[in-house]
Picture 1: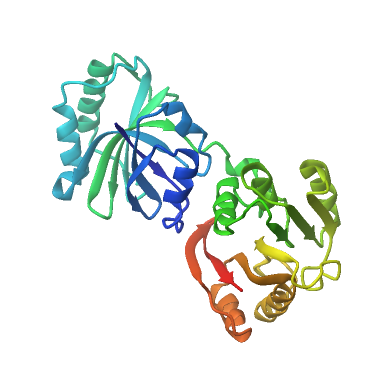
Picture 2 (picture 1 turned 45 degrees about the vertical axis):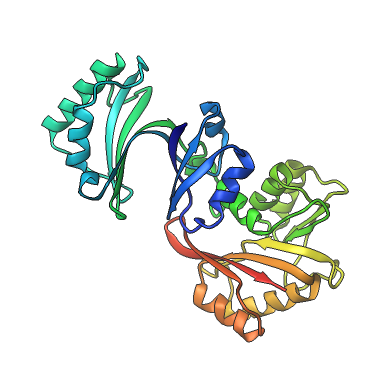
Length: 328
């Protein structure tokens, strides 16, 4: 059975095995590190390239542990290889240490390129290669020599400022535990990243989405296509007068962080927000919130006499943030 590694959004280690099994029932997760999963799979490799919540995916050629996981040691092992799959593709060799590309001795790079050329019947192309061979060294004293088979498909430039990446929104939705009869809400819908993922990948009964920004809501009505299952409206998340008390199963949302919005006291804002969430969410329901204002959000939760069931520390556009799960 072939072995693979994939990178993913940091902080979501606990739910990645479940997410992978959802897409690949026959896959076996061998180990999960922060931001990287190691697994085996004997199916069509092309299926791996379609799992969008994984960033970069590699087929593992060699795994290394302890001192043997150092870049120089891994390189020596690869130079001594007798066989590699005949890809006949142009390639380049890259070196990553703790998620950062590093420079390596030119002579060593040349030896590795010559070896890969000989074994794969390929050619070196350091600018626009058809494939890439990576040496990956992690802080856990593990290393991999692997061939890249898929890259993250959504570039930052394709997203609007402040828009959640689709893979991040998907993982947040997984935390919601949605079912076919779930009534879901995103009252800070913004560009619609969360309801788009719910509509595409999850079971639900009804999605209520709203935002104070009339222009974004107008665009969203065209993109999401409002229906009896998807209700879209302009609204204030602190005063959801159109939503009945105890009528929502799950709220999944990315509220303002107070960095760019005109919010005088972000903690007070969160208190008011949580108070309204408590009114509309059913007993036994769930609230999933993303915020970079961790101190203020956690203080607001405490003020409302609630407890946080799960907290997933992560990075969003380089900022430290967390996804919180609160059960009613």
